[in-house]
Image 1 (cartoon, rainbow, N blue to C red):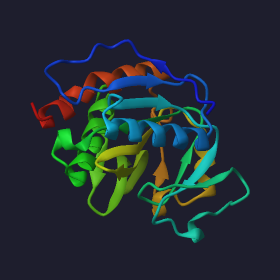
Image 2 (image 1 turned 135 degrees about the vertical axis):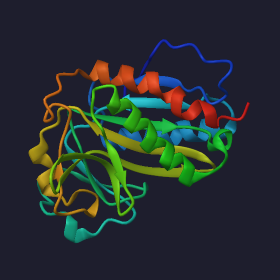
Image 3 (image 1 turned 180 degrees about the vertical axis):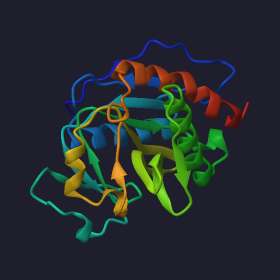
Image 4 (image 1 turned 45 degrees about the vertical axis):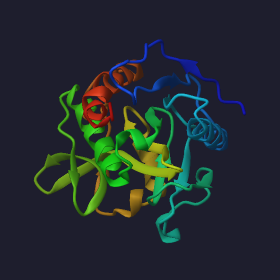
Length: 230
């Protein structure tokens, strides 16, 4: 396993049982290495030998296919490596400039409710993006985080696709900081046509990955803290 992890020096919150260990990889992580690490950590969390964790990383350019992926949505199968993924959802692009967030959390702490967990991820992404003045929204008929760009136009800024094993979550979500948006043209992102893709950079926001990480860390407890069993 070649993924290099750096622990972010945050002390556990004793009043928040779901307080995770925060991990970051500064170099892009190959997708198979990420899956192997998640599989290992999820097993350790279930066994009670490791703390829940949130892993912040980037991937090299690649496409992943979720459990509902339609092969017709893979428009350029030879453009980047394509990996089958056990997460929910359809085709997704990952690449440099996109913050991938893999929460490996014990959902029993948060009420053993997968639907609530997904809604909480959406709320977390919305709160994070709000720190940059971006009003991201969800839609009942399509997954992801959306930004209204004008009359009749909405662009996607974030994707969510999770998997749960023995009530421990893994995979997670991705937020677009400054990826090459042309790379999304090789797929129909999440099976949703007729909508574009955007990023903080595309919206004219000059933010760094460290800025985005800080916002993710600052807003996590605001969303998940009230759900945690004391």
